[in-house]
Length: 353
Image 1 (cartoon, rainbow, N blue to C red):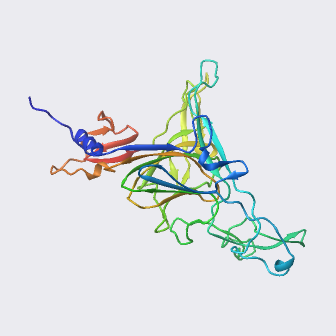
Image 2: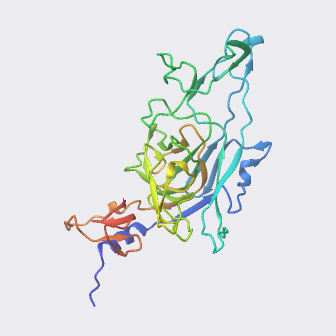
Image 3: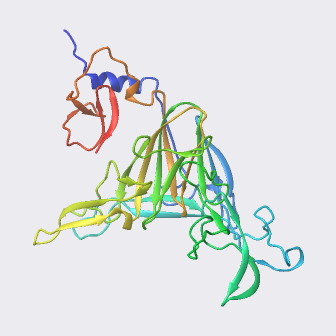
């Protein structure tokens, strides 16, 4: 009997051939941080781990520079970043949101999605200045919470404060604050669990450390997961795939259906809600990827890494397939163009929005 194998099936077989999946979580399901990070008063703030056979992860959690008294060696000269003597204590903490559904009474019945993060806003450098209060010196040097090069409000730009990362890599990559580095030994697909706080302007970067350039969310990766308060009419959390990203920020509106007797639709702005889920992208062998927020600490849950073929696009075919060729999901099921998520068409895997 002749067997007809669809293009999607061939693609799926090619993708799964020689592929292996390995995973690790920095935070357990009950919110406990992995013991390798230490504990209160004895945190391992510069930690490199090899949790699975093909992945190395590096965590840096830094304290923030705190006031330096104008005395002794610093009586008249502000210490440089390399000389700065006083920092707040670095540590780790967990964040979470409930992601499962509610019961008939409205009580939560599911598990929470936990993630962890360190202290310190990621920055590439800082410059201190004399601290003033009511236009008078306080007798201390400090680092003002402002961005170097930003408008100072007086027709000039700030010359003190912090220098933060720029997506084109022109300002270097962070050396302090909280960030995570992931280095795979082989090519594959990386899936990192994340937590993101509410508030506009919170950019989350995945950066090629060698070039300093951020991956493009429009072409290089996608996010999927849950947004707090985005639920269906039954009160169940809605899994969004993909989760909308604009200028590296989670942003966009969700219309979550009728919620009252008048049939009025509830609209939720994603930027104003906490988010949890997964960042998914293809990785190259021995390349280090940095993950961090622009001026905040993102939460890291863990990773799932699938080795081997990283994309359906690697499947070759001699046939020319029309633009209206069938579309399949990753289970090999035929879907329509209205389907949202990862799909396969013309031998390519992509996110259909």
